[in-house]
Image (cartoon, rainbow, N blue to C red; front, side):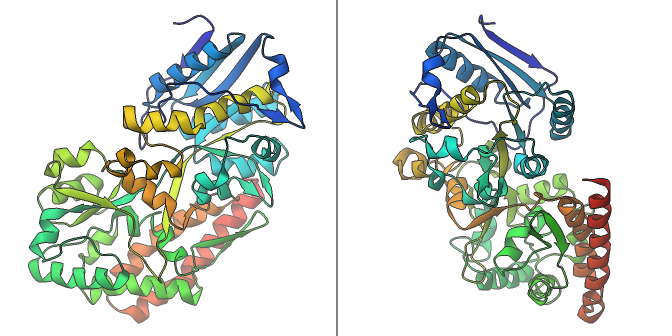
Length: 443
């Protein structure tokens, strides 16, 4: 272990993908309130970081080492936890004791950043962003910037961002006479008809039946819930939302796109869906492009693309980790300095071109080497469209959506639409009850 670097590892835990690989240095003028941190660059500093223990641990360690080469007065002390709940518990305990890290990063951090911020626990990052010429908010997925923003105050910045894509089985597409994946909802319907005629299916998975369905409804200007001023309201009785569900119901019952029973994700688990994809029984999965699909059907036999256009809008859902700085952090300027260093365009280019990592700068899609990478380019294309992150940024939102996800299979499995549509009111009441309970308990 290098001198000045302390990495406390709790346990190994892997999520969607490795984070960034950082392999060079840039000079950044982290400024807050008009005072440059560079005047203090020689004073000893211990920078405390709290985060998740990811497959990127070696990459983070390398970034820390490079940062310390540039700033030898800095000692980095990282504590990593095994999952999002453990990080959240650690943050709550830190806030309660007053012994907070200088910054934290956590998966779905945008969920927690607004909740913490509304309690006055986080430092707004607007001044840092405004005074950092290397940080361009337009070069980051807007959906993730928005998730950690309250009004005009930014409380978190994406530390790792992704957009899941549809992974299409080329052999199945060829069998039904399609040269490429569907680009519109109308083409999805025609695809479903062709699949049904061949006894094949379109796997709904979490891309439609689970939380990924958010993007489908957002393209209709609808959604499971609305959030305004930190307050959540169940909205599945919105006629636009019901019309969107009716479109999916028709895929099942009118066009035979998939068996009604498999709309329940518990009845059609991930391992079965994956096996069907491998056996060329289903045309698509929803996930991050990777070598997993090479192993399933062979390299070059699958293609990843963003979600098809609905309502003339290429809407995609984004997710990831946010970094945020507690209000009482001892070294907030140094925390931003490291975050900005980590996200710099130069480092992100090396991350993509040398380590096949997912870069956090959308402008890198103009790099031919990145644009031709089948594992990276589709994700960046999805993040570059109209997008939004899941609405976990208010008390009760996540619990309410969980209730809806339990109702959707009931609605899609019911062969009589009149009976199916009667469930929307019941679902809405159950969702609102969860929201009200969460607000009563304080989250």
